[in-house]
Image: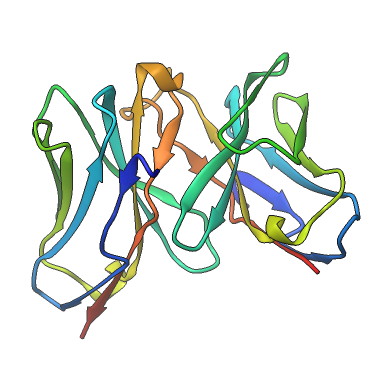
Length: 116
Length: 113
């Protein structure tokens, strides 16, 4: 089983609908992130959380909100989806205190969202 | 304006030859750099990193070079294998980014048999 699991993997929705993307992890990491990937733009940070009580906006947080329900769970919500939020969304975790590579991110497999 | 640039959207290389992927950055406060590899339908996976106190880091077939004065880094893959075909992202971080990373747009590498 994947250490970072995203649901749903694919979702098609309509403009104005509320949509939630969920992320759960079994790595025991405190830090969790949501990124979106668009062609030609790479991955851009939407929100991040360094622990359950800590939520921070990233580069492109407008139109999004997040909830850190537990150390292992971090959800991304689009309150009223619009077509330019069509993208591939990635959840990631990190633990800067462990391993050889400080700051290494561990990504989920992605959630492809299409807003019509 | 993008702070991390990968000016080659794609690169094709023959199997066994060297692949060189380039990355340029504009923020002189960046002091830690990573390369990630991404296969279709999968999330990016960490490949190799380099700190600004070094100018080279090697891990098997993968070597990253950092030229701080030019604000340029490159990833060398020698020898290239068909399984290396993927999208490669360069990422940078610095103190003023709260340990978060800024990603480049990626380069799609195709290694031809």
